[in-house]
View 1 (tube, one colour):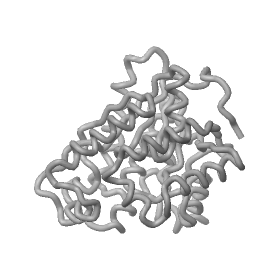
View 2 (tube, helix red, strand yellow):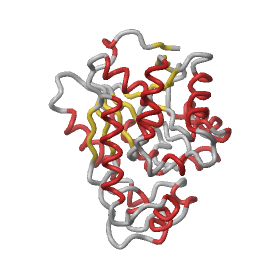
View 3 (tube, one colour):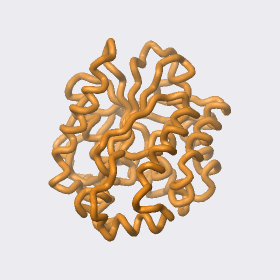
Length: 284
């Protein structure tokens, strides 16, 4: 088990978020800590673009469930992201690629959204890798990247993890964060264990948080007012859920847990549901 000791092991931290809110939800305390240490963390939202018209019935349904206006949803999400980044002391930017629910009706149900990556989306991995490389190029020294482990199996999270694997193949250090609140559910905990075996090294890296850092994370999450109630509708109170999980992974201390990502595997573009079905057949 690794514990954060000195900023020497981290250079130019870049946190890749599939969507606005994913980083704050999953590892906002670490982002805030890095900011306090003067490491100037950058949060990059991969799928922060405007939706293409016309919206699919599934996208419209997602808006209705969250009480979002079809024409201003992205502007609202971006304003929330800016507010959260200010709380965490981070810089933020987003790419002009649309969320999965806006990509030409490729995903028309929750089963598809949390299933296999659509074949037309596979080129996005290289596109995003190149875009991230472009923004990191001006840095002196190789950045340290953070990507979602893709607990829960959302296709955009799977794509983001695959981007991380592509960077590992180029010699970058890439850490995977546990997607919350997915990882806090019983099914999520089991899925997390499977993904750790499939995609990462075996020893976690724990970043221990002070109460102040944890509260800053909660404050940042609350900036996403359009999302919080919907996100936590099945897992319970936001603070209780996240505090319990943080204390669990830290064995009694508030912590956020990361796993060192391995390079691309033959299952890189399988859905996580397919990986689980073939658990006994795959190579470790």
